[in-house]
Image (cartoon, rainbow, N blue to C red; front, side):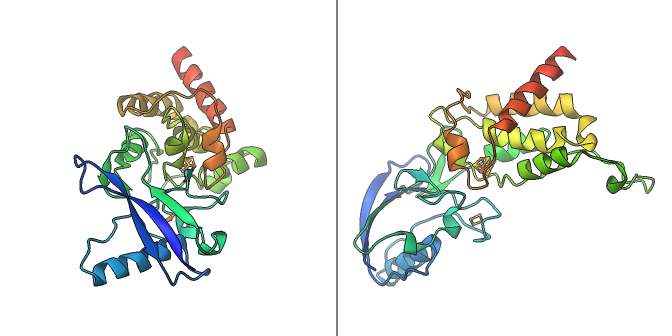
Length: 247
Ligand code: SF4
Ligand code: FES
């Protein structure tokens, strides 16, 4: 397959970036999208050119590192699919593919296609955990009955991989879907109730301080989320926040 690529190049955080055109030949339909970029980088390096910086780690759809805007869609054209799980069979010979980094004030570009998503880590550090007494007298978690529906919803919320596609897709660059998943996964379980009020207030305070926008219920985040995190979690987040205010 031969492809025309338009890729965002930016030497550093304060450098002026621009779209650069590349032609690539020899792309196999079984290659992943990142393997296609690897091939391009091999060709660039062999010519003595600077390779394109892009983020990746697991390449299995679980770490959330591969944050790319492909043809105007976060993680590309396939639903419920991360960039690393997207395959070149999704494209046709001769296609033009536009590749950009996430665009959000809270995600500054570090280089080329790599953005700094540590704002999400700081939200998580503000309360995305439970404090457990590990003295040896801890009750086994399986001894606490949990309604099946709550267990399923908590498990679904916990599948958020922190990729930031929801932020990149939202016209307001809101992180509400991410934060709602991180709050709901604990709010629905008895173990998470102990610190529930403090957790939701602290995480929302950091979300606001990091410069993410407000949620206006557009729903684009849910559509583009590679893990199918539901907007229902935002309703849970809003309820938790209101409850915490009343307390
Ligand atoms: S909610 Fe979805 S899109 Fe947002 S960070 Fe989590 S997995 Fe990524
Ligand atoms: S590289 Fe880990 S989710 Fe894509």
